Length: 246
Image (cartoon, rainbow, N blue to C red):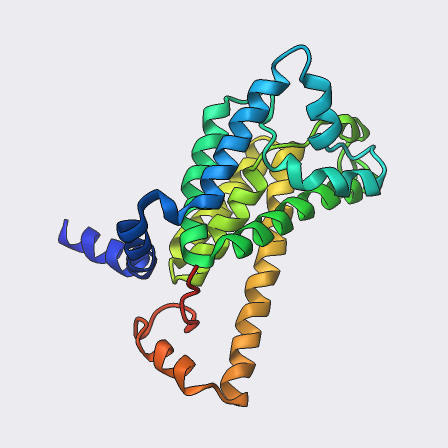
């Protein structure tokens, strides 16, 4: 148990310390965007299951690869919060509450939304590329996937989980999420699984860009305040990046 506790402290210690204080002092007030997203998702689930509400939700938030690109781009932001009809809504609500909530406390609400949108957009654009490649290409998709309704927060959740884990030194957690998505595609090769991999690639590129920017920042000189904040982080662990405060 002692070794397990030491491992958990090393893996999630910085993330825990960063999230603890805002949640302790502000409680749910530290999660306004996350709570709004949970409520929006619940409302959209209720509306789309009513006879009068299904089509309006589809018109505003349902993305298909066969749609014109401009229309898909307009619908993509809301599509994050439209639960998939073939999956239980509590799963989407739990994902948003947990992953979006941790990300909002650690990164701030606008960074959380930006990364979530980046991951979702990567999956949406990949679907078009995969269908254009065809079913026989290594990363291709069958033509029938062009008509699949692509909604839900799963790609955003995967992207946020990987970015936050990497940002706060939980590298095994980040690797475990990535491995789980790879296994998902190997076991059940479908559009959603491959979109998750596309989201991971987009967020991985973002992580690389942040790391490179930070490395060049070291050689270009840092402000004393930044250097002092960095020295207060865990020694020998993490990316060396100072925590983002919301």
